[in-house]
Length: 406
Image 1 (cartoon, rainbow, N blue to C red):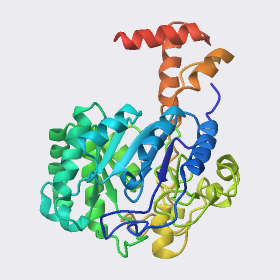
Image 2: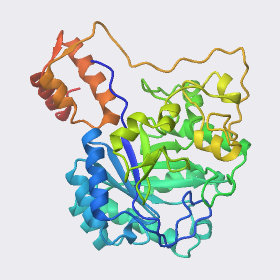
Image 3: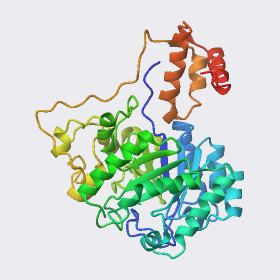
């Protein structure tokens, strides 16, 4: 099958800048009431995105998205357009009634911030007493309603010793994943809140947990250097994968329709009030630059540059150079080292032919799952001696997997 076109499979949409919390690390300095897109404007933008990159994952976030009175209509709209729709929230306003209404309108997942195994640190960090209890209750309510749940943890020097306990809390809450985030100095975050030494130690620990943990998914976010440890720990890296997805598979749209490569990179790729999503995605000089490999400084000579690439947001905000060294990385490269090649999709035998009808059907699969599913389908076809993938073969494979015959 031909290479899949580079498209965003993950879109973060900050539908409001309003928030009731005062987190010191907020990337957008949320809190105050600001002019924001109306429903019709959001409908137009999401329709453009859905047309260009169908079945992507859409994170409706803020600020606090539940402060929008039309959030239920926005979830219904996104679901109708075919997005896998997820809500990113503090959980403070996610009552059982709210969760039921969101679920009825097609919400598939909820991500809630939980920064400690006890309320003291979390409530202090988030600037509001009672936040920890409400966050856990929101996760319990969502899980009981059949909504997929994720726990988002912001790691600092103060809670770095709680990583394994936080995973256990996630197991207790029956979340699907625990995502560990690392702060980028943008918005209200004037510092990273974590030392280079602690960061390196945590990445090693998270890499180990991601390999051995079977009860839920453990992931490091805003930490492309984790890809450096995967080969060392024997963790497979999928074909075409690179550490930072910003501008490559991931973008953020803010509450005024401005497109950014990610939430933490404060450089605009253009306004969606003035241009279409597809035009900016294909032609923005910023996004095109991020898809290249013209790194400078330590990142430019690092042997892991093709599978890691560093955090471009951290490089820009702390050094002023978008393609410069990532200051939080503890690896000291040697200029004579050849770069490790990026992983290639596995191939086994001659390339298979796909009928137009089969290709049309595979387009219904979310982009971020296509490589995996195409690989499984083609492996099955070769095992059965098939040289062409047809809709009938796809249906047979679907039934086989559904019945457990893999």
